[in-house]
Length: 369
Ligand code: ATP
Image (cartoon, rainbow, N blue to C red; front, top):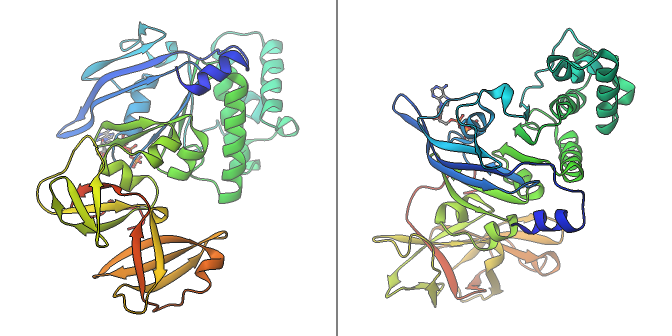
């Protein structure tokens, strides 16, 4: 039981969401293994984000859960019931897509009421329910508008209301914010999260935007090549990644070549222990993976490393230091960074003598390398 599900149980509304379990999902397209033994267990009322690079299988996992894709092997259960062979319309799941996908010839109210019509609800009942849902997403005054008369953010809120209208036990969101501009995106992010918590609906959210995943989800499942690399709370993923892939994909990491000797490495001249990860200490050439806050900086005119860039981030400034041809990112308090000039010679050291290492490899695209 996660902390959130626990809290919801004791302090919040009774969870209406289902318990979902994905076990050993395999889905191939020709030679491509889109899902390669993907497993994930989701608590009732939990919000889980699937995060990973393009092509890692996020959308396929969501579509398999929704019932839009068949499985080669594996099992999907909802509240313990195997739904793997049940069609999408009988799975009790609401879905919101990246493109707004509203019916262009229906106004907002009728778009929201559509699923209820399919379920043979009376017209008056449908209109009442659709009106309530539009109110829930803050669009009561837009009920008569057609999709082309609404902004992207408004259309996506209508799509959300439409998905919620059928009172699904699982809500599936496939990059619902990616077509929106930054401000609307941030607003809708908060709105979706608040609604999800209020309704305690089990939610799976697909994104390749780590900020979105870390800020919204109770737990994040980082995927790579059709499998779950690590599923954990945002804080645990960031501070205790169990694989080098996760360490590099989540947050900013610098890779610094190190020499392993008997389970230790020498980093900036200091001996460090290699942190246990499920890959252990790899053979061959290895890099230490360092967060910007894992490293400290001291001015030292006799040192070889030197400062090449500074970017002001508010309370901290990110300082880039060149060490033997490698760029190391260091976050420094901005008042301290003000005294560090470009070209200044500096000494680096590590905050913790416990470092994560990975086999030397090209950086993962999109990880700030
Ligand atoms: P993105 O973030 O780019 O949307 P994703 O993580 O959602 O990527 P998927 O869309 O699940 O990835 O695709 C996983 C792999 O399966 C990719 O290599 C993709 O090309 C392949 N794939 C997905 N759907 C099909 C299909 N209908 N036919 C053939 N290959 C497919």
